[in-house]
Image 1 (cartoon, rainbow, N blue to C red):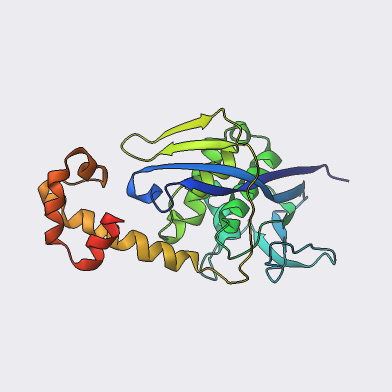
Image 2: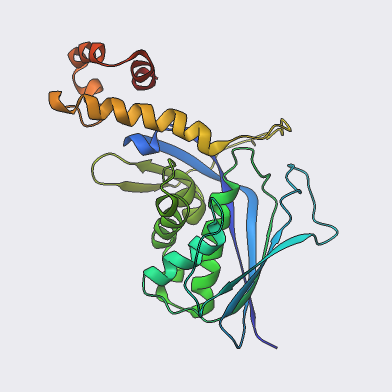
Length: 263
């Protein structure tokens, strides 16, 4: 019977800088004890067969007592073709192949305690744990390199589909703990050796969040505003904090763009 490798990665809370990662600003985020788990074992063929927790189990307190899963098979002998928007299982495999990793067949089971569609980065954490599991399955050094795992996950979830998200979720999940991420200029990561006292209370509103729509509504106008101000030497929101007189340049923007930069 093939060996089963088990890995898990955490969800996160953003403590400072929500929607700031893609604007080149700073973020402080903390990993929490809601996790995505993966169990992976090798197959003798080149099929990756994935069983993932049923998406109908989307509430904070949902327990998969009846072992309800959805299934996906990825045939590595054929080109990978995305068949739906946000085809993250396939894109996770695709970015590893593009990066030069040779993948055999695997049986993979994915389960989670993270509520789906509630802004708790369930999809980002799923991609992180799947990439981590695949790297563990082939035993390459990158399996112990959380920053590399985070970047591969960002490529799989965001870049591969030209989506509007940033990197906060992927890096916080891959690194764990409390992290300070500075996305301005040279990307800098600092893991904070601090334990937060007390606890966080997480409530489920029972309302779904369209994360991609929310991100697009925030990111696209802000980036368009920065592009419009580029002729005046504005490259980042930080440029206004360094020289407040530049705030007068906002008059060149439409009201929505002004609002997004001021926010």
